[in-house]
Picture 1 (cartoon, each protein chain N blue to C red):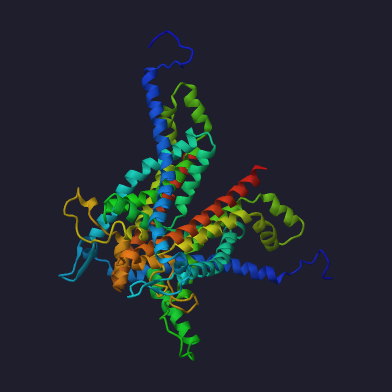
Picture 2: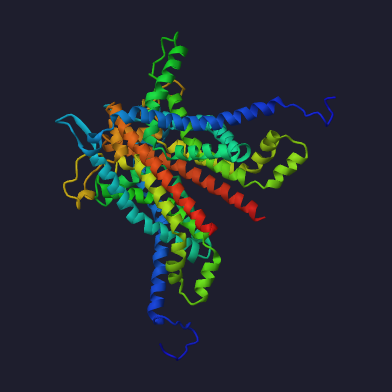
Length: 287
Length: 317
């Protein structure tokens, strides 16, 4: 009676595949738990107030990451100051002004290309163009300019997505009561798209904090406290990831794990923040 | 505020028309300039990569660089063959894709087809977080967790092989494992999105015809989501090919043929580990390596945009 339609045919192959599917999903979770767990296990004991609040000193043989934290903040701020307006402007052009055609396809293709270029290539380009050609050398500014190009696609794309979610009726409504295009964008479109734009900016911060290959040959690896807050961007400065890389080259794995712990905490915080923001965005939509 | 109407100009009630149209035009120009930054950046990167990478090709000889097998940049009679480095990148990426893609595809299927929302809400954030972890951290864990494990395997396999040069676990296999893990989030995310985009009727028709759930997934849903899955794989290839910091300590970093238990060097790790001290022709050759990597990435990008265009064309119909 194996051909009867009343008997459910057993498929051992199905069972195997289903188990594989569960196993793979489980593996993905296990990997994350393993990575975070191990970093906390090795990194947390290293963390103390001195680790976070001092600079490393070869004389006293102490290690601290305060200058690296400051350098990271400098790079985040400078990069975002340059990249955010350009990225938003580009998205506004693509979504509000352009009328399709070859130019738009070109812009979209290059934006896509930029997001596919590996960070080491950005590093080489930044070193040759900003470092040698514009004579910035190894400096925080050079690193920030390099990262600007790198995160531009993230900001452009998230802004574009956010602009697309703004209902068409807002536009026709604003234009219909006599607003000019720029006035409409400034007062209606951008505020409505703001949560999406902020999410893009936060994602970019995550990318900047985790970046290392693009900064190694552009921002350099100095670990001194800034002597002058204003001219600091012109001097070399290693971020947290670069310091972690240097610690690994010297086989100082404890210090590396300490920094890894700080980085993981930042990554988790950024992830949580984007979650909260996107949830708030959803609530707005429901209202 | 003139009452006198001009047929060509729209009348506005706030401010003078002239200043407003000036603002409008300025805004328009600023946005166009912003949009052009991406084009200029890609052009500048292309030009500068060629400008700094091409001269060494001719100084050393194209064939000598691309097909030479000896890498001795600091020797008295330096030799700049990068064939093994190129091969390592290609084979390492291929292996990472072969290991990573099945796992990623299964996880994507789990998220979009199998899991209830409770389970998916555990797995999906985990995958997102995996994408956010900086590559240096992958590198650190690779050195301290994967390398020792692979070293044990190496010792077991090459127990009776006196000619084998032990790598201490820092070899191609370790690098491939790290890369396979790193491409997971990319492939999972894009495959899941494309699986979700498959119309529900496809699944219900298949189930109604008597196919089991698993048959439906593998014979109907996955083929229907093919172009999206391929996009994910291509992006994964780009990610694996371009990754540097995660594998620079894991792969052993000496130039060898890419066998699993050989200490190897990829295009990216060659740049990272030598750019710091290289000078003269050696430095120029490192830029050539960068140019080779860039050429690979550009090919991938063009393939990708062709796939996307084809996918788009299908939807338009």
